[in-house]
Length: 622
Image 1 (cartoon, rainbow, N blue to C red):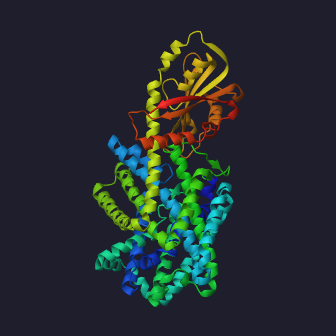
Image 2: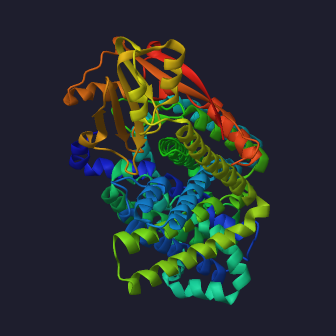
C-alpha cells in the first residue's frame, strides 16, 4: 500500500492497527485478573482486594501504555519506524562519548534479545489460555487442551512461509469483533454490580499497595500482565503511523479493555467462586463454545503479530551488524513489511512447543511471562530519556521528575517479575541472555575481523602504483568489500593466482545507516580512480534489503553502465581461526566461527546472479 493510499484510507489503517498492534495486549484479559488472584501468589477474593487490583490495573494501563508509550515514546520515532533497534539507532546519533555509546548499545541489544524471549512465550500462553476455555465448557475436554493447542500452533508456524497478506485482511475485523465482545460482556456484568466502578479512583490502588505491602508487591507481577503487548504500539508504528494507532487506542481498545476488566471484577464481587475462569464465566452458557473459538482466533492473531515482529527484528539485526546474513523471503511484492525468515520461524516454533509441553498450563506460563516485557519497558524508558533531553530539549525541571517517576514504576514492576524467576521466569531470561550473547558475539567478531582485514590490507595508491605490465582482460570485475579503504583480499588473491586484471575493476562496499530508509539521491557514491579502478559505496537503511544489480543499474547517472553478462563478482569467503592469545573468549570464538560458517550466502543476500560469482577463500586469525 502506498503512502498516498494510506493517507486516503485512515479508517483502513485504524482497523489494520486494531488487528495487528493490539492483539497481544487485547488478549491479556484472558488470564491477567485470574492470575492475580489464583496464580502462584493467591489472594483472598474479597471486595477490598478486588477494587484495589482493578484500580491498579486501570492506572497501570494509563501510566505505562497511555502516558509512556502513546504520548511520549511514540514521538521518538526513527523516520517513522519504531522498536528497540530503531530507538537504539536514533539514540546512538545523540550520544557523544564512547562510554555512553557503549552503554546505550548494550541496553538496546539486550532489549532486542528480551523481545525474542517474549516472542516465544506470547504464542504459547495466548493460545493455551484461549483453548483452556474448553475446561469451562466441560471437564471432559481437559485432556484435549494441549493437543489442540499444539495443532493450532503448528498450523500457525507452518503457514508463515505463505505470508500474512491475505490472512491479514481478516485480522482487523476479527479483532474489532473481539474488542466489541469484551466491552459488551463487561458492560452487562458491571450493570449487575456498578459499585465496581469505584475502583477508577486511585485511592483504592494506594490503599491496596500500602495496606499490605508484601502481598501487593507479589500481586504486581500478575497485574503487569495487563500491559504486556503495550510495547507493540511503538514497535509496529512504521506499519500504520502514529495517528491511527493513537486513535484506535483511545476510541476503541482502551475502553474495551477497561470495561472487560471491570466486568470481571463485578463478577467476582457477586460470586467469588468464578475466579477459576472470570473471563469465560462472563459469557452465558450458550456462548461458551463461540467464545473459545473467537478467543483462539484472537490469540492466533496476537501470536502472528509477535512472530512478524520477530522477523522484522531479525532483519534489522542483520542489517545493523548484530546477526550474520540470513535468508529473508518477501512473501508479497507490494508490501515491504511482509517477510518470512525461515531460521527465526522454526527456532521460535521449537521453543513455543517446548514451552507448552513443559509448562502445560497458562497459569504456569504466566509465571514465565512478564519479566521479558518488564525488562524491555525499563530499557525503553532509559533510551527515550536521551531523546527527551538531547533531541527534544525538554525543560529538565519538568522532564527529569517525569522520567524519574516512569523509571521507578518500571523498576518496581521489573522487581515484582524478578521474583517469578524460580517459577518459570528463568526461561525468558535464559532466552534473552542467549540471544544477547549471540548478538554481541557477532558484533565483536565482525569488529575483530575488520581489524584483521585492515592489518592485512595495503593502501590503494600503493597498489595502483605497483600495477605494471599486468595483463588486462575484457569485462568488469566487481569485488565486494566491507571496507571503504585499502585493497580487498580477494583482489590480491585473484591477481597473485591468475596474474590478470579486468579492464574495469569496481570495489563495492555496502553500508547500513541508522535510518530505516535512504533517499535514492543519497544511496550511492562512485569515485573514479586510476587505471580503470572505481570505488562504489552503496547505502541502505536498516529496513531495506540490499540489491546490488539494481544499484548497478542506477550507476548510469554517473556515466557508468554495467552488463551483468560481462561482469564477474568476486566474493571472499572467510575462515575464522582464533589466535592463541585470544581477543575473544574461547567459547565465543567458536560460536562466532560457527555463525560465520552458517551465514547465508552473500550471493543470495545481495541478490547477485549465481552464475556470475567467483568465491575466494580467506583465512583470518582473530
